Image 1 (cartoon, rainbow, N blue to C red):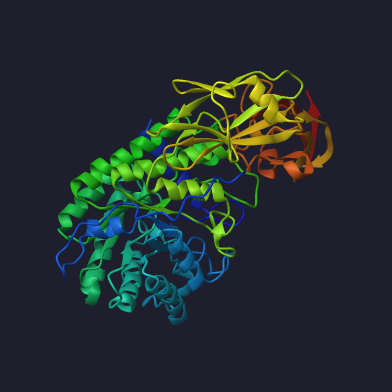
Image 2: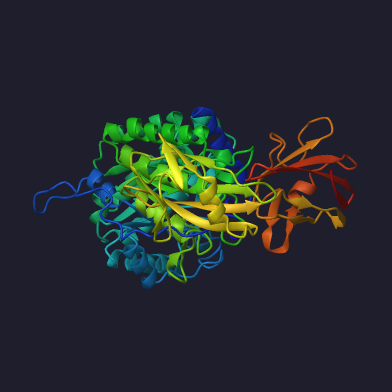
Amino acid sequence: MQRTRYLTGGRGPGRLLGLLLALVTMIGVTSTAAFAAPAPAPAPKGPLPIRLPGAAASAADTVAAMQPSWNLGNTFDAIPDVTSWGNDVPTKSLFDALKAQGYRSVRIPVTWTDHQSATAPYAIDAAWMTSVKKAVDLALNDGLYVVINVHHDSWQWIADMPTHHDGVLARFKATWTQIAATFRNHPQKLLFEGNNEPQFTNTTEAQGIQYNAELNSAFRSVVRQSGGNNATRLLFLPTLGCTPSQERMDPLAAQLKSMNDPNLAATVHYYGYYPFSVNIAGGTRFDATSQQDMTDAFNRMRSLFVTQGIPTYLGEYGLLGGPDSNHPSRFEQGEALKYYEMLGHSARTAGVTTALWDAGSWNYFNRTTLQWSDPGLGAAIRSSWTTRSGTASSDRVYLAKAGAITARTLTLNPNGTTFRGLWQGSTQLVQGRDYTVSGNQLTLTASALTRLAGNRAYGTNATIQARFSAGVPWNIYVTSYDPPVLANAIGNTTDGLSIPTQFRGDQLATLESRYADGSTAGNTSWTPYQEFNVAFSPDYPHNAITLLPAYLNALNDGAQVTLTFHFWSGTTVTYRVTKNGGSVTGTVA
């Protein structure tokens, strides 16, 4: 996967369409406050099976011992060089910090294209191979398992296999021949992955599966024939696109079994239900549809791979649209936390080892400070490796400043834990006076909310925690607001329309965009609910909502568009926009 510096869902040219098609296939098949950080995570999967002295680890043992795993994304896979996408050359201190966080393995994606001759003998630059080897050795010396692969080459030249079959196959074999030769005597904690998210241009599904199988076979043969430790090194073989659909997992399972090689494992990726993963089509919540998509995906991994004796490595996971500390968050914090909490549980239940895709310091783990960019998210992810955490239907209680404060109810989701009570800092709230619990219904009393709201300034007035018998606490933000107020925007161009906005304590969830006849208006034509940070973006520090060029340039000239801004309090605000040539005007409804 490629994540550019601009957005966590960014792609290189031609890359986005292929991934969107794969995600649509999956959908069709499947139907800022920190938490208290837990202590360093214990061994996530418990003690490993006991082996006789000198006995080699089985593939299943090795994959289990790799949990949890982390991706050194946007680094050696960056185009054309390590630092091209904003990251530095990895250091020992980074791997030290990852190990201290509880990680047992790192995946180092590598793109070879710009460091290799495009014609026979397809020689890889010695300096590039040396730089990859240095990073591998740093991680191995820290006791970490390491995975290296062929990464963006998959869409740069491997995708041309249908029209340049022999040339692509020869280059693929030559690439792995050189990698295998360089690392043939490295310890068995170094693992190889044949191809990242394999894809092929202008092919049917069946043809794509066949090309992928041919490359998987060539990868295994080249590595095994190179000798040394490669004769028994654990190899990861991907499904087409690394997609965890039954149509793509079944053929890989059959191929792995037919190879009769005990040192093979499967790899797939998971980025969630697409509308939620990028916040489009109204996918603002980790709702029942998103949860079912995740359940189905991990059930397939378990039934089609794990229970069939095929160790499974989730080589990438996350959300396509975030986190991104350089831009407004696409996701309401609590909804994202629910996703990661359930993913950790689903993976443990399925027996799947997970590798977080981390594109750099603006994403998950800051490679400069060596701390989580969002400590609360980091704590939730780390906790999910070993246990469940309780959540609730929301992490915010919105109180309209213009109205009287009344009792508010949230639904608790204990997730197998036991609710222990509410705290504000070190002070425990009193059940019966400050809140009541009936089944899983948690009700905050009017008197408690009045006290917590204080002077009722716009925004978060107080933070309380629902604590459970296990996992991280669930933060609840008591928030005062009034309906946001938008103003006219005149004299703007299609380079961007800045709508003056008084948010008044509220936060933007999504945008609905329609022409007068009810049809969809905007760059995303299949849904009126446009994509967050692609069509529109809130600018909280500057009191504005920005309509972005991709959205504005897709509007019909002279046709008035009705925008409905949906806010997290439940408030909706209507606005009008009209484009005429290169100018855009916005008016309040």
